[in-house]
Length: 274
Image 1 (tube, rainbow, N blue to C red):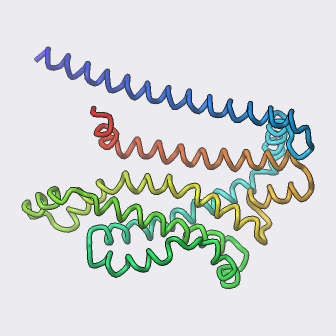
Image 2 (image 1 turned 90 degrees about the vertical axis):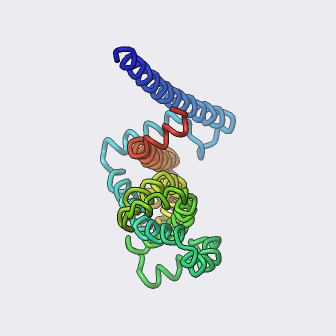
Image 3 (image 1 turned 30 degrees about the vertical axis):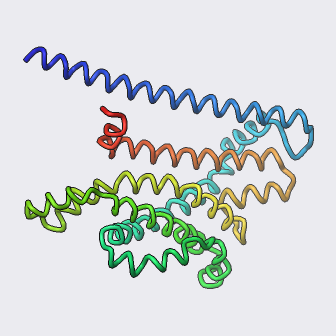
């Protein structure tokens, strides 16, 4: 018994050490990446020596000043609200539809043609129609982000649902599990890694649409702030806005990774052979 307990304890220690090692590797990789970007930026600023490319220290000081005087907060919160609302709405609609399409050949046959036709179309082309119908407020911006994210999330979630092992579903059927029980104990857990992966993959699309919508007839948001700074030739402030947008995106991505590690521990364990 004591020998078994020691083996379990050592296995747990090895798993913890591997997780700590992965965490240190990610932190080191992040620091190296940031340092590399700053070095390249500094070299570019020195070589060009032009007013439109200030050095990173000047831009970082401008960013610190924007946070200190509070002028950037309203734009940051407006952008964060729009991108999270559009993404959440897209997920709320895409998750059930993607699961149904992935688990039902008939549903996929009916709806698949619709998605194959509209998925490749850049959703930004619908901006004039959306603006005419919804105006230039938050509604139009959120809807365009929702539209782009919805199609991307649905396709990925559909593929995740379709890839579930059919033998597991047969086992639950032989155990007389209801549809709700199969959904709760098999389909949702099985699709969860795919859903979180889809969210991470769609984040870049969400932020890109956010920028485009905020450049068009907007009076708030980081996209508006960046363009307004460019128009006024305040380039340190413009780059400061870009840095803030990048930090917001990186923080959202890190949150999704943390959520994935927390909710899908079994998936990580399978992937590492633990």
